[in-house]
Length: 416
Ligand SMILES: Cc1cc2nc3c(=O)[nH]c(=O)nc-3n(C[C@H](O)[C@H](O)[C@H](O)COP(=O)(O)OP(=O)(O)OC[C@H]3O[C@@H](n4cnc5c(N)ncnc54)[C@H](O)[C@@H]3O)c2cc1C
Image 1 (cartoon, rainbow, N blue to C red):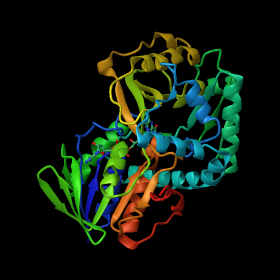
Image 2 (image 1 turned 135 degrees about the vertical axis):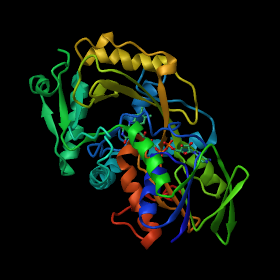
Image 3 (image 1 turned 120 degrees about the vertical axis):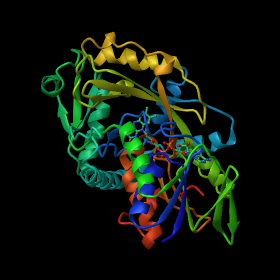
Image 4 (image 1 turned 60 degrees about the horizontal axis):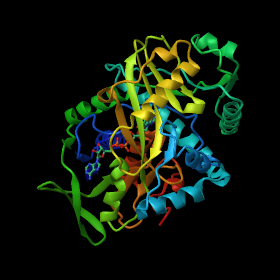
């Protein structure tokens, strides 16, 4: 039995603790925040094996620059002279290539399917909780020729990876989502995708882990480490010191700050997004993404969550209400009567910083500089989808030195 400290109790830290504890280890999670105060709660809750194309793909840099000056755009690069930003930006430009897509998509499919399988077992092992888990698939809706081109190409890539993708016309779409507007040109349905409630999931894991004996130290920031012979032997948080055999860093967008304290540069930026929950007055049934606007639609029977925007902005906090207007304005374009959904007040808006790596792939595995330090971060738009896989992999590496999946592409040292 090893003593493991996990720095960061978002969904990655929670699922890592879940598997480590089940494997018989002694686990402490230290989090600078409190439950609900991170990126893992108010997100869209989509489990997306369909997302096999990483964020760093051809065309994305041009889009980011084009949208940079639009306050309502779904994607923006907020340029900065901060050396970390500049390094990240250069690596992002270098990675946004066909080659990056080609070498990644099969791996992303494998880890996504592995994770979905783990979710299925998790859900059936915890039948007492209603996670709002539904395997209804994900519908990518488009209104323009450009959207159609982009989504058809993405569907082709998914099919070549062995996934199911159905290109549908408006008539067929209406059979599963009658309320689409007349402007919707078509869509792609990925039947293998699923949805759950991230709030219920994280709240359950907090409670369950504590019941199982995981110590969760809240509102306590990890500030430093005691290193001996290239191994972290203890972790400092507040006035406390926690001895450990292994350290897992899963501190979301702040993971790079902790890496730096361990003499290691981990390129990572915060990608800000927003969401809000409201009554499902349009009676929408099908989880969807509005392709041209990158808006997520997550129906939970009587309630519904709308989300979107990816603003690569470092650690910037605050709410840009213009981006929320961009989200609500989209709804009338894709759904009949969607214009009745008004932009919520600032207090009702949730925001989260996705941990975004420059090549759009997560960091999962051992630190290149310290044998007993592991990273689980950089999951960008797929942290909920990939959390069970990441937790299982990290627990396997600690327990038996290897994982069931080839994780070489996710090496935290790949930019060193
Ligand atoms: C609008 C939006 C919609 C999304 N929709 C989806 C979706 O549908 N499907 C999907 O798969 N993903 C989605 N995502 C992405 C997903 O939410 C993230 O990838 C995921 O939550 C990241 O989890 P994490 O555990 O890495 O980070 P976080 O949830 O941010 O957790 C990191 C934790 O580390 C703690 N921490 C930071 N620094 C320290 C420190 N020094 N010491 C101790 N603790 C520290 C923080 O307090 C925090 O609790 C969405 C994101 C957004 C913004």
